[in-house]
Image (cartoon, rainbow, N blue to C red; front, side):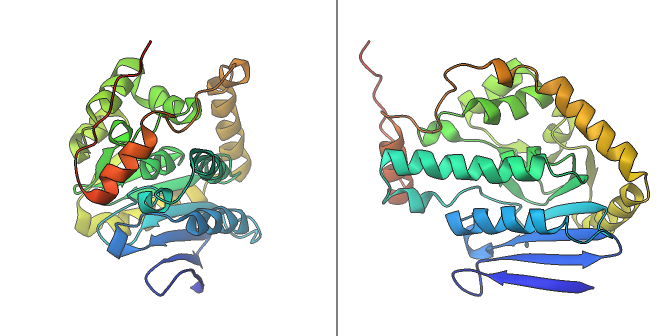
Length: 265
C-alpha cells in the first residue's frame, strides 16, 4: 500500500491519502473536532481528489472519516472572525471542493460511520454510492446557524429524497439515524460497524472490476439527467443569511440557543 499523508495545522488535523489495489482512499482525520474541515482541509481535499486521477491504476475513489465520525462539516468556529462576505466566499470554495468530488471521472464511494452533518452531509451526497454503518447519522441543521442552503446544496437532497422530505429535513434540523437514512435513499448500503472496512474494500474492488468506460458513461448520463435545471437558475440563493448568520455562529461558539428575529417586511 502506498501512503501519502498531508499534515495541516497539527498531527490531529490532516487528510490521509492511500492507494491500494486500484483504490484511492481519502480519510478525513480530525477526530478531536468530529472531522470538521477547516478551510485549508477543504482545499487539500480537492487537491487529493484530483490527485487520484494521476495514477492510471486507480479505478475508484473511497472517501471516509477517521474514527466514529464521517464529518461534522465545516469548522464553524472559523466563521466567528469572518465578515459575511468572507463567510460567503468560504462557502463558495467549499462548494467548489464538493463539486470536484462529485464531478470526478471516477466512481466515488462514501463510507459513513457516525455523523455526516452540514457540509459533511453534502460531501457524502456528492459521492456516487454511500455505504453506512449502523452508527451512521445524517443531518443538515443549517437553520440553527443562519446558513441558507444554496441551490446546489438543496438539489443534492431533493434528487435523493424529494422536495417535501428535504424541507422536513431542513425545517426540523433533526438527524436521521442509519435505518431512516437508508430507507430515505441517502445510504445505498447499511452494514454493521465491525464489517464496514471489509465491506468497503469488497465493494470498491467490485466496482473497480467494471468497465471504466461504462461507469463513466453512466455517471455522465445521470449528471445530464439531473443537471438540466441548474443551468436555468437565475439569482441563486446565497450560502449565508445577512440577518441570521452572525447570530447563529455566535450562539454556536457560546454554546447557547440562537435568538433569531423575523425580518421586517
